Structures are given as structure tokens and as C-alpha cells.
Image (cartoon, rainbow, N blue to C red):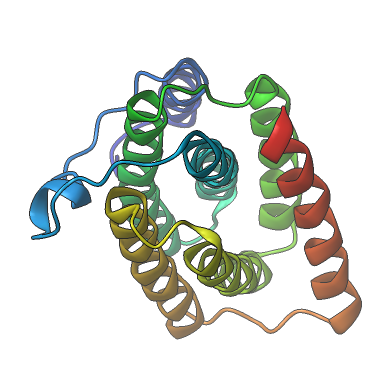
Length: 213
């Protein structure tokens, strides 16, 4: 991506947006449930619905992550920051593909509002990038910290015998933690408390809505 013009980057970003929203993203790493030792477990209808709702929320989170990383990479001022954001974005594609596959296995669907989630997150990412690389990286670090906490909560709420969903969420949690550390190491600036609270409130609206829609 280093040798692409800005127009080329925009076109590539548009293509990835279509892939994210349409469900055409392809993982580059193995599907976590296939790498574990736990056998598939039968779920009751109630457990299946709960797992599906939680995984749908996580899928929406990955749609938003794609939009945020794409927008922030487009607006990055330093090449090293752009490369780091693009690398993290590629790993987030795995999460997007894994959660969609798991939803299909559970016989459920992705959020009907995915285009809306992507557009909103992309706008937020562009705004963060306009404030400079240090603040943009700080936004990444705080986002990933909150996502890690959110995924911890999902591990507690997922049915204990839903080994497949739990394997996906556990791997996602580790990846998000690494992305947050990387953003801080690159010089991410801590965000004001008011901004962190606003981010949590916005995330709560998104997760509550995506659980059902």
C-alpha cells in the first residue's frame, strides 16, 4: 500500500467497504473453532439465540473497526502510522469473517444496519485522523481497550458449552489487546475523560441496537 496514490487508496478503501458490508471479507488465519480440541456441542434454542445475538454484536463491532481503521489510515500523516493501521485492519478482517461464519453456523443473520454502522464509524475515523496522528492513535488505543472489556463481558455471557463462539471471541480479545498496545507504543495520546465516556455511551447504543437488529 505504500506506493499507492491517494486516489488509489480511496478506491481500495471503497472496495474494502463493500466487502465488509456485503460479507465478502476473507480471513487469512485459521478459523479458531477448528484449531481447538473441544468437540462441537449441541445448544438449546435459547442458547443458540443468545450466542447469535452476542456474535452479531461482535460482527457489528468488526464492521465498525474496518471503517475506523480505513478512515484513520487514509488520514494518517506519517507512513509508519499508516502502515500500522493497515496491518491492524487486515487482522480485523479475520474477525469480520469469523463472526459472519459463526452466525451462519448458528442459523442467524448479521445486523440489518451494517451500512449505517460502517458509514458512521468511517466519519468518526476521519475526524480522529484530522486531529493528528497522536490523537488518532490514542483513539485506537482507547477503542481497543473498551472493545477488550466488551469481549470479556461476552465471554461471561456466552453459553459455557458454545466452544466455537468462545474460541472466536477469545482470539478476538487477544488481538484487540495487541492492537491497543501497538497504538500506544507508536505514540498514542491519552484521550480526555469526557471523550472516553462519550465513546462508551456511543458503543452502548450500538451494541444494544445490534443485539436485536
